[in-house]
Image (cartoon, rainbow, N blue to C red; front, side, top):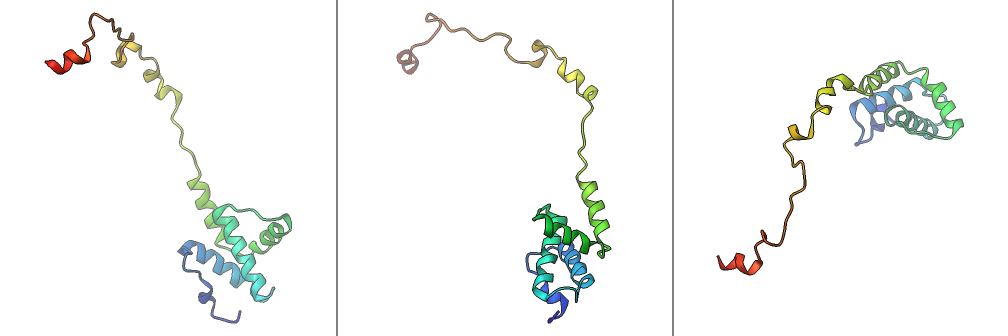
Length: 127
């Protein structure tokens, strides 16, 4: 790399994103041209942190180079923990679903309006 490694950090990268990409850069330094390595490192971070996909050849190359990154297992475990979906058991909500319409506190039948009980607009404003 022509510059110190920390100068390659982008201003929008989070600490986690940069540390993962930085480790990829250090682990694979010297194997590719600087431009190619930077591209592969960005693709690696995008795949692991953002869930992006690339053509099969790029994905295979990134996966092969990712074997040298030790922090990847921590990131993957964190992603697994965050992706767990918590469900409510059906029996927890069973009592709520069995309530009758009269216990809901709403109308059981639609209100009826007939002409005799309705007030005309003119009578309303004359009160």
